[in-house]
Amino acid sequence: MRYQLFYWPSIQGRGEFVRLALEDAGAAYDDVARGKGGTDKMMAMMKGEAKPPFAPPFLKSGRLVIAQVANILFFLWPRLGLAPKDEGARLWLNALQLTVTDFVKEVHDTHHPVGTGLYYEDQKPEARRYASGFLDERAPKYLGYFERVIDESGGPYVLGRKVSYTDLSLFQLVEGMRYAFPKGMKRIEKKIPKVVAVRDRVAQRSGIKAYLVSDRRIAFNEDGIFRRYPELDK
Amino acid sequence: MRYQLFYWPSIQGRGEFVRLALEDAGAAYDDVARGKGGTDKMMAMMKGEAKPPFAPPFLKSGRLVIAQVANILFFLWPRLGLAPKDEGARLWLNALQLTVTDFVKEVHDTHHPVGTGLYYEDQKPEARRYASGFLDERAPKYLGYFERVIDESGGPYVLGRKVSYTDLSLFQLVEGMRYAFPKGMKRIEKKIPKVVAVRDRVAQRSGIKAYLVSDRRIAFNEDGIFRRYPELDK
Image 1 (tube, rainbow over the protein chains, first blue to last red):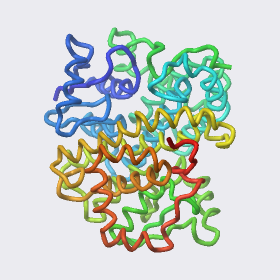
Image 2: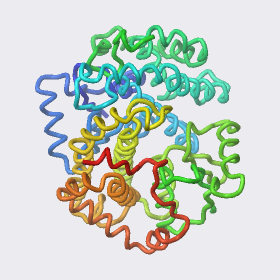
Image 3: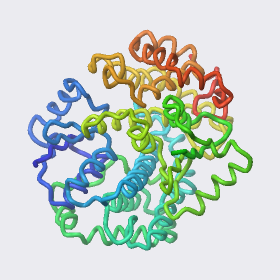
């Protein structure tokens, strides 16, 4: 099965959580919008599908078109041969991934607290206020939660001994936080050694290692979810 | 099977999307935190579980504890005998429900754009700015998306002829928007007749009808997700 991933071509963004799963498993896929005319193809699908995605990313697998990151990963993981067998474990993993989703939205809102449709430049004071509470409370709360989950599982991963797509997402969260908030994240990391250890283990996985040095990995930049605006980092 | 729902006892909030599914199906459940000592019980579970929920709502079903609204509904629906059989339809429904989740977060942020930890009174100007873009762009975009989905399905529901939990959620979204933004929603409703028709159909379902006049239905109030702050409605 060759998958087609549809996501904005110039950012990691939400698509990256899917890319990491595909890359880790060595799955065959096209990152469609990065090819010639690909963004047009993506927009045409959003307009033309009878079951239209609300927004990218979405994944085409045969005749299925699947939207929403957590939903894509839920679908994909068993096919990549990596899902836990029992339903309880899959639901637990899905709850964890949806908590990642919630966190990612709050990361996004550090630079867009007042409106997605407005420029960052038009909401800088609000962004500073938002980012302050984010670094002091929200990010430590979310990342501290995952620290506890890894601790309760016996580690080293969120489900225990076997890696899961949420671990790949934790890698991305740590990388992104380090990029966007180097100062704030330095403080936070002191309290989440197990999350950082997941990041380190994931970085050493062969599929991820190869991906990170390839030109398929887009660099962090100020159009994505994690943006380095030094005025927001304290 | 008797379910135990855990959610804040004095608001509809995110728990309401689960309550509506349980009530529609006539499922046996306890709304635990509304009973004596129930909130303490809920907090103790969040602290004590080896697979802890990040936040309410969560559902206990036998030994499983399931968090995140869309995840709870995904689990619950087949057990209530109402889920579509094939995987593609279940994933499609899950994507729709996750879009409801995203919308609910933006509704919440109309009164808390700068920080969840701050009072509304401390972010009123920002809330006004946020709510303006919300009513002009975001709410019409989300609700217009569901209008299109119902249209494409052939209607009257999001999946076509058979009602689903996302239809129950659409009922709640329309009710909530009418409560919080009576003026803004009046304009929006003109463009989403099929969504409004779902609301009307759901309101007539026997389980929902009985629920709405029972004391199990908490009234909308200014501690919930949908809050009536006239200064945000234009």
